[in-house]
Length: 323
Image 1: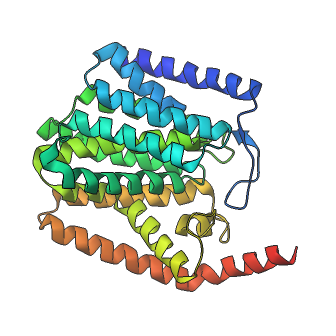
Image 2 (image 1 turned 180 degrees about the vertical axis):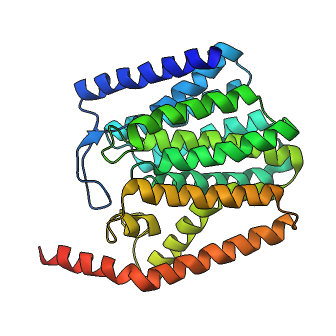
């Protein structure tokens, strides 16, 4: 009954946000990086932040420093969705938010300075990768769900985090998917959505890794990770500025050049990740060996795909240059 009430509150909160977005013109206009052509409400992913606060209301403020960090990083991202925020302001807030999360993890101490620096670098990379991968209908919400699902299974055995938190966050993602995982999306996550859910997932995964000492659980992010890292490498080889907008991710080529439906592309990414994640949990194989094999296979698939279809993107760029 409690979760039903929470779901209804989240649903009406999202609809209410659409009214606000319409009134204040918080919309996403297509640009050169976009894989959509319709003007759509931006910032619908604010429901993830609201879901975290709703959990605190119903089940208690059990992780106040994390929640404060999430509010800061989600807040600056929402402002950035409305009007551009200078990079160094945004990066400063990101670092503060992550330090608050580290404090919640109880690793913020002088003896662990090198762990803190390494964690800052890794977390910054993951958050930005998650943000960059948010480009087609359904991919952020769907991919987040298939990360949360194996985390729930692992939590049933290890109890590393309150199960109610996992359920409430999953409900917030489901609500977002109702309006985004469709042919014509009603809203996009925006930076507030992609950054907030990335921060939440990092917090959950971090607790799991710290409790078990097993960093191989990062395999739960491996599909996004391989696409992001290899796309960056590809752009570096092309002598491009990796900070500028682009449409070179594998999922973007599928949606744009191959004209595959957005929801189908998102489903492919979801399917790959969920199979890989449960394989890591249940297959009787050395976990690190499994991790390496998965990275090798995904990397090979990425390279073969790009060799076969990247010329279509080059044709698009040539056509665009002639206009």
